[in-house]
Figure (tube, rainbow, N blue to C red):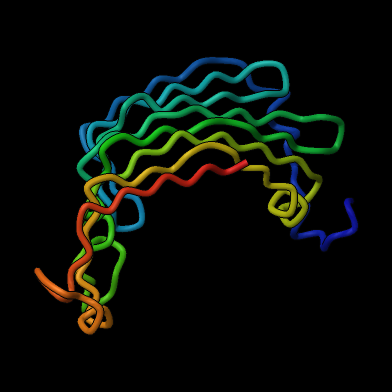
Length: 169
């Protein structure tokens, strides 16, 4: 199906057989070495579709919330949703995911993102990714030794009061 290898094909047939709601509240969840606390997840399964809601999970010194929906359209999977991040600590995020020699950075990240994908295979889903929204950095600062020669005063290696907003359309 879909021209990709059989192992790349998506089988969403179980969605049509399940009906119900599940709500799970966790005091702490570890995913990929990162801790999320507390977490409340609501899943609704009905009519060839599943909806998952993440309600204000603590992450990276801030909060995450969002929702996603997966459903079938014939043989195609359709996935859509949104993700909001508030007050994420850049230093904490970088320290959790960076190898030794973590760069000296700080700031706060906020994001409001929407996404949609559709396809018969995993590769088709990834190729169809449509992402829109805004990511904003405030109170940003970084130590960048390569800038030492450009500074006239203050700390010659430090960028400070950086604000950045990236709109994705």
